[in-house]
Length: 111
Image (tube, rainbow, N blue to C red):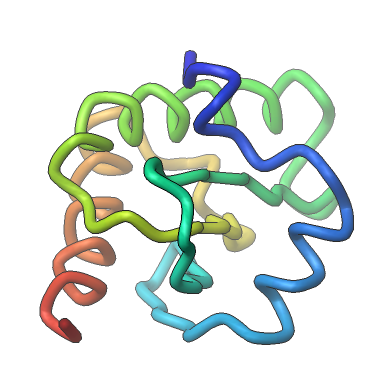
């Protein structure tokens, strides 16, 4: 689980990132990225009700959280919001990890 200092929690923070952030896409994920003046990155997750029931959504969120926790130190200091697309719940952990690595490589290639 991500540390509390690395999590986005407030709706105001999410809305700001949606409005001002740069968007990157893969087949199963979208990420919004916005620069920050903070010393550490913050990450949030959005998983729609269209993906499944609460058990499936929370499982996907836990998996994404664990993948991000492991690679957070190597990421540039920015705020990130990951949005899961409809069929992302069908991926196993290794496939989801590859998707996250792919989308983060796009983010890191920009700067």
